[in-house]
Image (cartoon, rainbow, N blue to C red; front, side, top):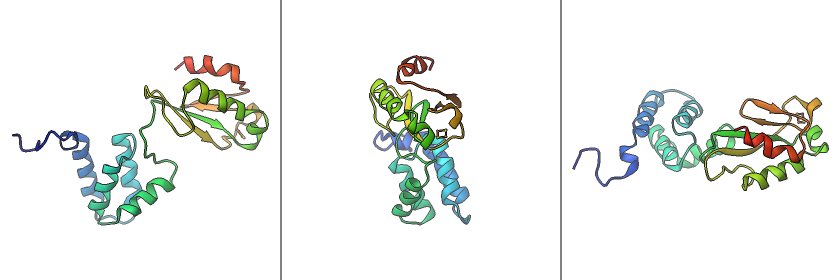
Length: 163
Ligand code: FES
């Protein structure tokens, strides 16, 4: 049996966990390390699975509940795998009064997911955005860096097909 394989456990052979161990080593004596450490860990894994949170807690010598609290407090962190493309539908006031609620309903129907979920093929994650400063184009949504304005539900299918 190889030294780093005791039971075929995927976590033991996943090189990302070695990167995480190096990160923890680098951060563990620094003050205010938790947020930047989680940020870099999320860049490695794409999100923050429980095992990552546990190793960060152990490595920094803090309770898992503290790590979980920070991971859920900041919207930049995700506890679930994210899709390749991130959709943000604006529910700010200007967008909402111009019908972004209906656009959201169409997105949920078309993608067959709810807000904060990711499609089964890993392609899209659907999120709510607050005003993105494009109220003149309301209702607005973003797909990654692209902004789509003056939306109507019947445009959603065509926009998603571009990705
Ligand atoms: S309210 Fe949607 S962009 Fe301002």
